[in-house]
Length: 297
Image (cartoon, rainbow, N blue to C red):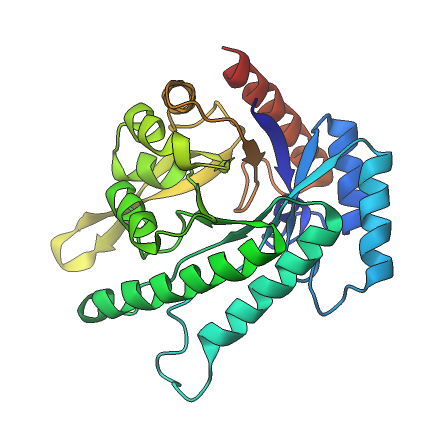
């Protein structure tokens, strides 16, 4: 069974939207009708620097009292960072943070810790970027596996962001505790067949995260030619079902492949209509209705 989930990053104030603390966010998710939540594993939400056993118990009890499952804790990693300062153990620090978030996740009753791979440091270092991410994620998989928490890799950063790259990457990590959190937005921008991609990835997935966008053409003026050159399109977030992402095809593929896991919704970029609490709530509710219709279709 697929479970609709709301990601707390949507109310973290990071793109000018209204801010809610974790306690208010959990209560909000319950009022909107989401049965589960994903918690952002950094300030101003669930940072290991700010949490102690008492605060974690209070969050767990609050979620239980509101009938909301804490499904996932989201770590923010970039395992290719720090190449210009090799004396700083950037990868080790991030693995340690993932371990700490796994500990908090276990205490909260969450099943998954989400991580990213790494951003590209340059075409000439793509191979070493890949290897560095493989080593770090394999270690994270083993560490979290020892605690009983699943490691989920999201296809977000440059390393292995393509569908075929993501599949190849997970095959090379080759750890039983490393699972896919395959999202449709990147392959949609790449022009992939979302149904076919989802069908192939579904058996190894524990979660997907959804957002939808409209494309806006962009041009730069060239005075000497008295003309414009076309730039890559800007994308702007809209409620699920109102953008270009083929969600119907994606969910058909998930069902073809037997996916049964969490379906998270996130508002993680500037949103059409602005960042007021009213617009966030309206968009989250429309998107929950769309998720439910996609699940039941």
